[in-house]
Image (cartoon, rainbow over the protein chains, first blue to last red):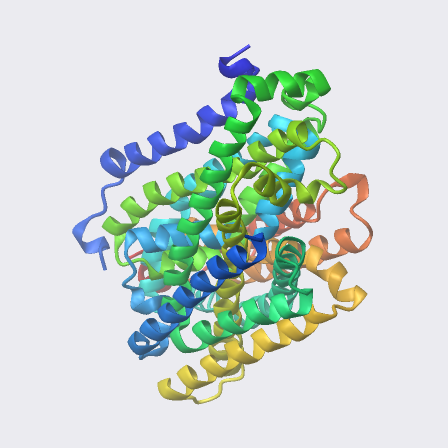
Length: 40
Length: 477
């Protein structure tokens, strides 16, 4: 059983949503580098 | 003090803000590009939050609460997959390329993109016709959802409710165009967020904490807290995928990438949209809590409205009502602008090759959005049985028609004109036929639609001539 009496597999849904927020920040800050010419 | 005046004051104040935005944006809408895509100068916050507001209609909030009520906490996965596939991955995969390609091809609409990318008048006209026809049905379903919510919560008769909301939307869309749509949606996203967060906090408080909620659900049925729980894997995952992956083919959402200012802005937009979409989990969560607090509801769809009335003060539940109405209005307005652009720019100007000046296109677009809106309102007042059936098909049919031509159009240079045509016809007809014959095996029409569309796009493209290098260079830069 995970936090708040939630089964781990159900709790994983919250973690996935949070992971998306973290993932989008990582993508925006470190991964996606548009070239100056792409910025039409 | 009775609750109805409080509801009325908050809803009227909210509607007044929308009208004001209509006036302000109307003065800034001067060209066709302004009317359809806000002159491609929309910032990250407005683009991102208007995407979120257009994604979730009132049907999703009310229906999501209903699913949570019936199937318990496992439905949180629908919200999580909405965030993952329907937002974050969608923005990362589609956003940058759609922004660049549509600028290079100088297109303002989804059918316009197909016409230029695949050099195909058929793809332009066919997709525009499918969008116009089925989006009207989609609009009818949104209006119906909103009307019933007003009816249940504020005791305003259904017809008056949809006329009030519908006329205000028609006003601001027809004078302010896309700018009005995104700015009102931006406000509506905040209203939705505040309403849902408020409801969640007070629901948790009322039930004595999240742990107590889970414990109480476990007592009713362990399947209400476990995943996949009472719904089962196939139902849960297929539904979650449909309402998440289908977004990739929905013009009213994809068009947000056309209008964003530049790629640097898109980076911020991706983060903001992801955070905003996280609110998708809340209706399901609150629906599950309602199962414990309100075990004897007549219909699962009453879970969110009744929970709001139970755990919140009249002002708080009025904010939740405003959130539900905001969700419906933002989606309706976003769809209306897509309908107008498909009809005037794609079917009349490009498809029928009418020589229209920019001024005429702008005027006809404004008139077109008003006329289509009025048609949707009239149908929604007393929808014939056939229309009600078609509203259930609209979303699956549009997404099955446009999803692969969009995705392959920006990622696969080998995708051909005939591949696009075959994918559109195959995706459209298989989704429609599957739904008409009653969804065999309980599988949604979107599934055969995208399978057939994919096979035809890849298979036909391999065996038909591709585009000249000059055309590819023009698109890929």
